[in-house]
Length: 112
Image (cartoon, rainbow, N blue to C red):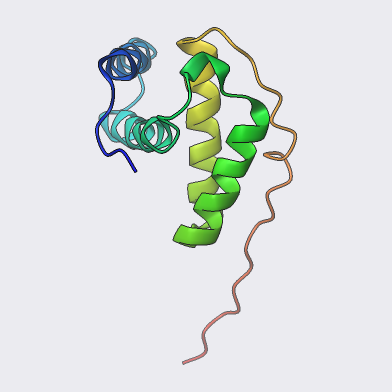
């Protein structure tokens, strides 16, 4: 697994951060989205970014959920950050039909 971003992907990531800054996202949100997109780009570094399909994104998310035991909110953040990255930087729209139906986790209340 490659832990370093290619110069091209790093420039994409910087453009993404600039756009988020222009859109007045908070620094914490920019950092979170950049980290999620950077991990995505590193994990799929074997593929040309413009060739990544919705199926590859779906399998990436499935792998992350399975391996990292992510919370529902983390999954939603990852999905939105990847979707926004593709829309803003690469000018590509994906219809993430699977993102609408992420099941909310329910926890039982703790009794004292």
